[in-house]
Amino acid sequence: MASKVCIAGVDTTKLPKLTNKDIVEMILKIKNGDERVRDQFVVANLRLVLSVVHRFNAKGDKADDMFQVGCVGLIKAIDNFDENLNVKFSTYAVPMIVGEIRRYLRDNNSIRVSRSMRDIAYRAMQAREELSKTCLEEPTLEEIAKKIDMPLKTVTFALDAISDTISLSDPIYSEGTDAIALLDQIADEKNTDENINESLSIKYAIKTLSEREKEILLMRYYVGKTQTEVSDEIGISQAQVSRLEKNALKAIKEFLI
Image (cartoon, rainbow, N blue to C red):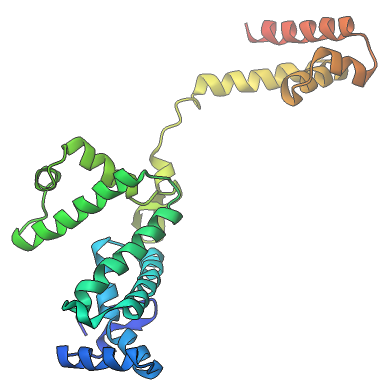
């Protein structure tokens, strides 16, 4: 059970394994319209989809979504495969599956990334996988950049561009039932004691104004109306609006000094 993988509700330990002879025979039956064999062939090749999903280092719900999208690519490969091409079905199917997943990532990414940058990122991911097979350790970004002959800065930016966005509410550390979110580790430089005191002082100063002065400041600086619009709405002249506004701002300024 150590090798069991369950993704999108599929237990890979229960998937059938096909020999090359089985594959050839089933494809011929599929071409002749045998829907039952077609369904069996799809299930038997789900491991192929899973292997492609693993290349993208997907986790959680995103892995499930990518697996289902990859299955669409698998079905397209089955429907379009030509046994006369003299290539293995897996060799033909993998690019189709990868293509479907890439389109899904492109269309559903919350941050739009240019096609050229995505291509660099996917080349870097493929290089990482190839280097991992020959090295005992995880390849460095420098090694990956060298393998695909791209500047290190470009490779780093491309990989960052396609990485998942992180919510400020996501926990970054937990101990027991207590969790620390990313938001808890970000300082608010604007929310200093000085600014807090100033904000409280302004609120208190506003309370000392007359109701008419409060109304004018609200309409001018919160709603964004002009003095003429305020004048028309409250029924006084623009000159009176201007005078009341200046007196109110002066009173607040003197309160803060």
